[in-house]
Image: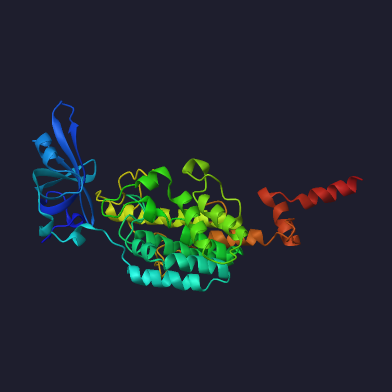
Length: 396
């Protein structure tokens, strides 16, 4: 029975456990000697591993997809955990529980399918509703959806991950369609259809790969085929609906360089593209943070996101912080905040003086002076300008 899992391992831990081999290859080190580069996995994550001796001998006995017993010690290399393997041997599949090596969605596949069907049943367009229901009630499609991965490695790459992604996109479609005032029937249909045919493009997990159909046709074109197939079973299915559904599916990658033969050209198609991108990216971010074993607050470089990610939760204050702005040296109250000049912790007397000067301004920005303030200005520097004015009047 498996007791050690990848997510629980730390630097200097001794390892003796069962794993699934996701990758194995003989590599050449800088000194010219061969070593074994291995990626071991269980349901909690992947573990980079190295074996410095007997590389070719072990590689000849073990292949990708084998279950193995690995012993060794956890090391840290470039901020990442790495298993230095002492021994690696193949084991009988009957010795293990395959559930220990298959990552799964945190949600029940049956409950997710039930919720997805509920959203479809609430659609207004009878043709689109019937089309989607016929697809989702198809025995083979329903079986695959409940266990298929959405991808090999990047987003929703776990059992029932494809169904989780489709359901999440459908939830967004329902809410965002009303917000942006677009036809929700097409946006929901796009959410359901856009990645549905990954059940034909990808093989079943846990070692997911592209099928021949996936490599030669792909899930975008395959989706147009099943739209035609299921629409042909509905009497009088409008051609215009088929055209728009196909456009949404083939344009949902958003850009020609990302594999879409067309860019989105309706508001509904563009929204489906953005919904798909949002859900896939957020899942990728969450999984990258969870899987990262780098020490500290930041992940290592995430290649598919082209960045490092901050791992800690962002601060949230449900109450105001205590006021720590009292000037203890002068025992004068200091106002919180910053004045318009950028000066911080301004003394109360100074703020009052500034406030007084502001009161001399009208709403139109012009200055007004009282007689008293004018006289104060005339007496500056000890000079009484009023006498000068009187003498000059006498000379006239």
